[in-house]
Length: 309
Length: 312
Image 1 (cartoon, one colour):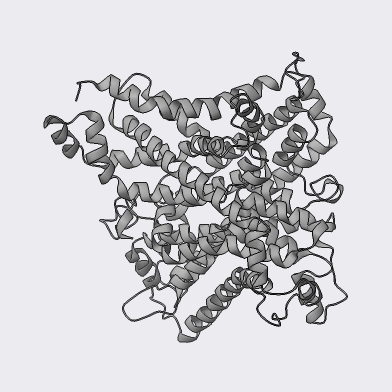
Image 2 (image 1 turned 45 degrees about the horizontal axis):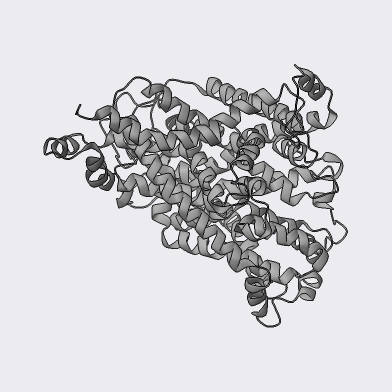
């Protein structure tokens, strides 16, 4: 397969590589370079300022708030989402009544549940955020009307308007919209675990609780770990941006008293609202460091010997 | 499941010789405990209860949105949970024409259609070369591509905005298309490279010996063989690009060029002053229903496609 090989390789790689380099790689390199300048983004002139942006960032109270919120999202969201999804997936695959000839069985209608749980995944995160913004509306929203309807009229939280609740409201929406994907993902993984393992364990008198921790989880570990990282990156990146930007409008964007501002939204505000492009890229670099650190830590903590079956 | 059997290597193979297997703790006296009927029944009730509650939590907001889209503005605010007095279809027609939902739909279809074709074509070309040919720098290029999966897009967005501005691509649909393609390449190349490696080499070699050029071999032999992989990665990209919000928000601010998700958000913001909430809900439901319907029809393929890359 030598004839014309290099001409072919160059011909096939040129277009994808050019697009990728121009619109992805080059902007990434530029953004690190810009973080050392005083560029406003509005005029083409700028000068080098060394680490000024970085020291400014370390003194910026709102930066630390966004950093803290992003960190909370990256820690809490994967825990809740992956935990809930594992629980549901196990119920769907192993939680059913025993039927003839099968040691373990999913609940009746498990395929129906899998279809329904996946619904939010196909909806745009923007649509989901809008929908929940209405539901959270303190005066006439769906949630507070339910509270009124069941006789809890005295409890009418301000939800997104309450600095103590706003971030939790945002997290609930992100969990709601992503759990289904992981349920389906883990279900597919669980379906590939050989049935004999469960049969042997159940014969030995193991409870379902034990089988989950001794069989299901170890054999599913790789999938769980990649799901964990994927969810963390979502929580740090585009998804949290969309939810916070749409749901918590506020005068400044990012909730009352910056109670929901996250790093990607702060980058956006600095770059496209405040005309501080260089400073925005500095915050972006911090976000990149946080994302890479998160992935590295999870990979390291989660490393264990791979089980083949 | 048929379509992606080859892609889901390992998922569909049950049993197997087993190997050492996981350590199942074995007590000294393995007296097979009889699981009482009542325990099984309790567990069953419990699992069903929990599962039904979550299903209700998923479906309720969607049904509520559909119901609300048929109500009058007044009813939306005074009694959010009551059924509409009659089906106000005029909300839907108003949203379609006056609120520009038809334009947003058209823009989205053009952008997603264009970028989906581009992503699959360019992605499979790059992946094929990287999977099948040894040449200096091939590993570097591969890692350059897949490295893009872990970088936060927002970081590149500030310089990207000015790259687009300089190339006069800002606020154009074709500009959005090339950017979607570029940002879809990392996952697409990653997935398809792995996929092309699993395909047998003999067919391509036979075609080549018979005098087909590399290009012809690729388009007439390899690409048809790669169809299951292309479908998987195509579904993944379709959902991602259809639902994209961050990229158009920054790169496409002209009102008549907006795509669905940003157009709806724009409407919601301006509704704060105008107050056509029922029209907005009709728009929301309009944007929701096509993908939901497509998902229900093709759910097997969607689920198989989305889990193919991730389950080992």
